Image (cartoon, rainbow, N blue to C red):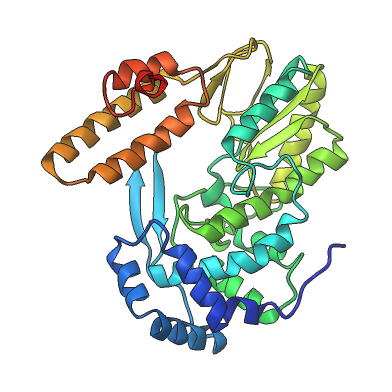
Length: 358
């Protein structure tokens, strides 16, 4: 049984921890009016926030919801800046408590891991097996069951005040896309009666998403005894020479997930030879070691680039903002074999890799 921790709340809701959390939360957000207003009266705002948390009078504010279509339809929820300060303060304290128990091959939203290391690990596992079981979860963030998540939080946290804060954040989640799934033992009204869903965009949602699938990681590693397994959020892969073993593992994983009210995505779960090209975390990976960007991803970026160019010429975005967005894409694209592609897109411009060589 993992150790459960008490006395955490002063490290979260104290004046100095909240000041530090505000300074972390404002990074990259200084142009936001709400962030600027909070930081302009930092000590007063933090004192007010400290009193509200200590008296259990704090509750999450209203989310700003944006719907994006690229690369797939999603609802992004932006919490008020005051709430983001609380999220940073909470994650700084409870995050390390859960991090200690996470398996090494969970790569999302963890310091020192990320997509590039996950891709390298995928390629390493692929080299030692003949087949791969690729899995994705059906509407994972909208499907997260609140009661099960709260039980997960209590595996490590025994501090009543900290659990009150965690519960307040979970209960304050805004409505997500409906996921009307029935599981063994449900009656007709069960999907309506159980609260579900985490807002994509919260720092706490990133931590809670990892925590919620940590039992799956241990099930695969310790019960199924799969030595070649990795996960990035709800996208995970298991490798083995025998496709029959992978099929058995798939059935057992589906049963395990059903106990957590989660479902394997029927169209995004399959078994395939590792020799076949595979798209993983935005890269098209080939058995000979080549990495490409999927054609549709390149097309989407070209469209975004044209939009950025038009907005820059119109004066609605600054050169600094344009550079930041393009450099983020280059950091992703540069991990693949894309020198010629980047040269063709940026020929003679700011980001032409030929200029960097010169």
